[in-house]
View 1 (cartoon, rainbow, N blue to C red):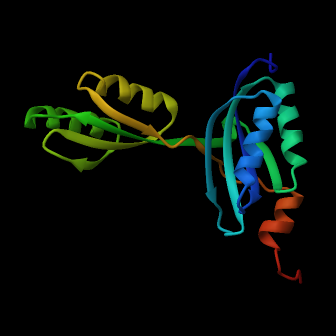
View 2: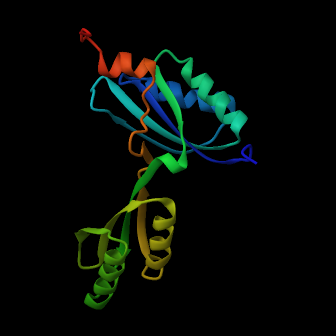
View 3: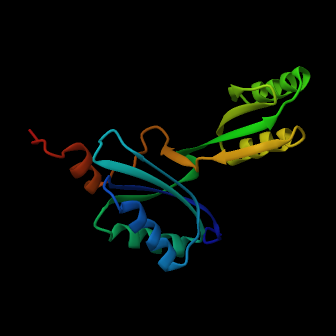
Length: 184
């Protein structure tokens, strides 16, 4: 039953120019797809950005959006990342109420269990940074709620293929690796 609706992670290699993100997000809006998570950053080539988009969809709707993205002039490559061949991570920052030394110590212990980092300390709060998938973030959030979460912010998922798996295809090779270089 591969055609069920599930979370899909798309990796999109695009031109690093103004308006590209708007163009890509408008495509999703026009097609009636909700973006669950979106993260964008430049690659090792400053002329290219990688957009990681998570959507809920079945095989047919996902293939349709991949095809539509591939037709965009600014898009060099689009690939659905297969969960067993990719790594997904998100940065989550929690600002937690910590008005006593005992409470701060308890929160620090929770952070240590999750291998999170304390990134700010004040008399009344601690700020913690956690990198992980949504299950790790949800588990830590549930524990921190007992102390009182003052603020929470998420980056959105970023994803990368494991091992030898890459986003490369013919268009990526031509643009990312051979841009302005002669082939010997």
